Amino acid sequence: MLLIVDDDLAIRTSLLLLLKKEGFEVRGAGSPEETFEILKAATPELILLDLNFSIETSGREGMHLLQRIKKHNAAIPVILITGWGTIDLAVRGMKEGAADFVTKPWQNDYLIQSIRTILNLAKPAQQAGSRRKLDQQYHFENIVGADPKLLDILETIGRVAPTDAPVLITGESGTGKELIAEAIHLNSRRKMRPFVKVNLGGISSTLFESELFGHVRGAFTDAKTDRMGRFEMAHRGTIFLDEIGELDLSSQVKLLRVLQERTFEPLGSSKSRTVDVRVICATNRNLEEMVAQGTFREDLYYRINLITVKLPALRERPDDIPLLSTFFADNLKAIYNRPELKISNAALKWLKTQPLQGNIRQLKNLVERTVLLAGNNVLDIDDFQRNLHAGNAVSAQKHVPEVGSITLEEMEYQMIVRAMQHHQNKVSKVARSLGITRFALYRRLEKFGISFDSEEV
Image (cartoon, rainbow, N blue to C red; front, side):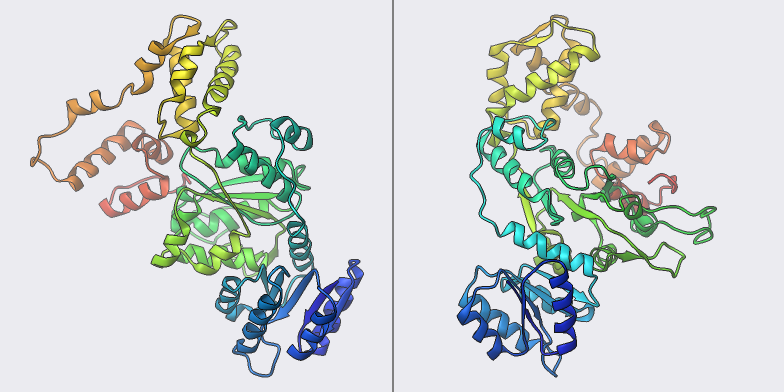
């Protein structure tokens, strides 16, 4: 049974008809007193609570009722209904234990989707089994490992994949966040629809709207034709927003609006378009700390993290290192036509002891570099040791200026100019060679007044 709490009879009736049509058993309450009369006799599966269910619009009564409901039974999920102008109130409600919030006027499809997602997540979780059992239930072919931490994560994403719950994937760089996002999509009802990846760290604030929402011809000087944005490309599928912690505050507001309203306007157009997407975000930054520092919007944070998956660093699951190393080596057999290629047992044990700060990405690069440079087909400890720190400190020390001869800022400027010349102003290649995101490179290019190709995003 679902319970609707709102003093407006028209809203209650509208929601009752909608939810009954979807097959739910529904009851309505028009006051706190009526709400608790129902709660004394029955336990709803979910409550829809309008924060402004009285004449005054401060939301105080709604917040007070939410607190009373949670004190009565904290396990009952509550979805808050609020106006766009009072989202900050809904965020406070999330802190008080609400499961989600929707804004008026709500979209029926999105409201039903939110209800079904929360009801599904409220079901008791089954204990994660063996890797073989998980592989029988889900499609995890591209994810290698059997560590208990990883199995717990796979069990979680297997459960949430069929829902449309927003997922936030956190973890250090190189831990496989994109692979997890792809696994969620491949195990969802949207698997036959597009999976669109967006590296937000590589989009400057001036290009954000055009890249994500598209633009119409004439929207700006170089807009010679209409262009479809990433959200429209992902319609009915999944959009993966990587490096979401890199977004500036103005872009965060624009993103929040489309995530909340499910509508957007292409740059240069006044006509709204509706979009149906499942949103998965990822970051290697601590968003809670950024919220506290005021560099990440709290309302956006609560919108994207209904489910949070924290990926462990590779050093936290060392038993998976030999499995991953063998997996990478096996893939390279065909690529380099070396069918006898293998890693010795001694080398596999040695690899388990390495810190591998770059995680899976560093391990993959190490294996491939060793395969390329080693003449023998059985790779041993010596082969890996020679390539573990190849090309790093030794070459760098030859070119570092004497202390005091140049400032750090001047050195940074010179390095960027040299990298731009070397890579012929290709921003993506320059950023990769400098070990920074494109967004971070754009900031430095603007700071130093270095020209770049604005069409490369």
